Image (cartoon, rainbow, N blue to C red; front, side, top):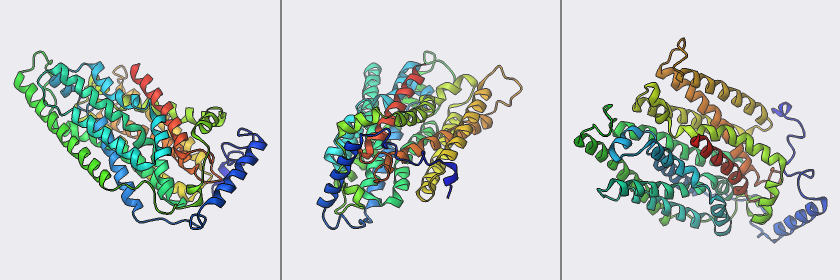
Length: 443
């Protein structure tokens, strides 16, 4: 079904004979894979087995991603209040959001740890970094300069947790889920991180009062103290959530199931160094990476500072929060539905991507025009800005999800990147995306 929309060449493996290893190397790889399969236990060579506890593991991992996204997006939606309470500048607010993409600089080190030590050690380290980061922001001190530095340090540590909660979803779905559930599991784990960022658009503006329009120098001390107290309540609540998730992960998060769900999940793959070299030397993979990173990186670059962008066009802090919330939720819900759809129907990916790219382009144009004060004949209302931003977010989220699928379908023998580690290809994609995100914010 849907195969008429893709050519035979498009359905070939990404690392095929033309772009992959030489015929001799390919033959040796097949022989090594056959030897590895023969060395597997008899139970692992069967159809595989899935365990009911896999959903608990997925829930814990997804909630960690939710909390990481919530902590990362704390300051963007309440930037006006934070500037008055702590004396942050516009550059400080942008840097607080930038710590998320900057935290992806050592992402390959985390993925190496994931491949070598497994899920439990990597997830425990990630959750511990989140606890430290959330705790630094809660230290009660009166020196505003030192407080700002502690907040920056906490955001940096939370950003270092980003590579695992974002990139390890394909690895988790490969380790615990059968072939017909992996796209859904990967989508759920990935989307919860975005939903955490979406909830931050609501939690901050609804719990933290916006300043009354006066400058921080003219605002009364009582007003600043009240806003600061409400912000600290949010920080304490987020710290409690992160500590609870760390305790749950420490109590139960197995590294792998007793038996793998499939032969592919138990098979040995290429070394990390060889896999990395093969990916970077593959033109087709680099084209996929650019198609993924450029549109989504630009969107992610300014979505975290949406309130800062919409303030000059007289959109309130609460309205900007609702715009950001519904735009992300719309993309997440339909993104999960599309992933489930991709579990059953193959061959329509090209058509879907073309439609989503087109929709995202039109929505970006719509949102931009409604924010231009020089365009007087357009209805410059919050509803119109919300609709344009929501449509753009849905489009860019859908552009991302098929590339997430690319990361985890590689675990199959007929997949595009097998026998490369399933977390490596998605790490390369998201690394390029975060680099683009950093540059778009610096502009």
